[in-house]
Image (cartoon, rainbow, N blue to C red):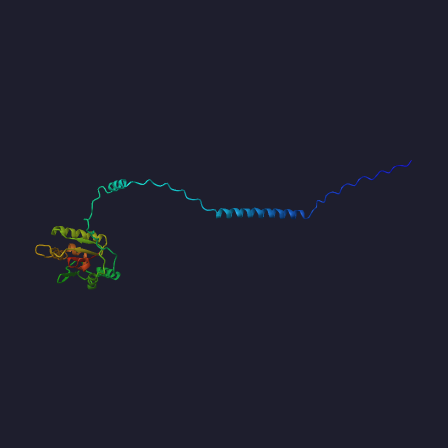
Length: 243
């Protein structure tokens, strides 16, 4: 009896080839492409935000308008107690000019004269018509020329109009003392021309000459002279002070 030969066992399917050298490279390209798409999306989003118009500002609610009667009452309430300074139609009086030093060379000359000048003494006074000027002992005459020319600015002003002799003397001493403490160099003293006096004589001008000869006052003054027309002319004096 013939024996039947058994058929050979079926061959197993070949295992899949797992060692694919291109698999990692393909995966890297896919990830890179994904990142590029995400970056493009973010850039597009940023561009869209920048192009978007800014939000419109909130509209302010209109304040309620006041009636003319309310405005008038508010104005008169604010002006309550305010006094009128000048008369209607009259311009206010201008303040005396108080600019800085005009000529630095004149100031240097004043300082030098102050160093070499002697103490208080009689002024060398000269008069031509209504013009008057005086110079302290030992003071350079060029200083008087600078004062007469207006090289010094006016840093203070005293008006003696309407004062009695005693009031004018006290006001002058107080003014000179305050001016020296404030380190002022040049001041203006207005004495008037006496045109409205009974004898039409410049009484205060003559008194000033006498007072400037006294130590209590001339100790503060280096020189003096009649002011220029724009500063009062023959009705006023420039006083150049010691410091």
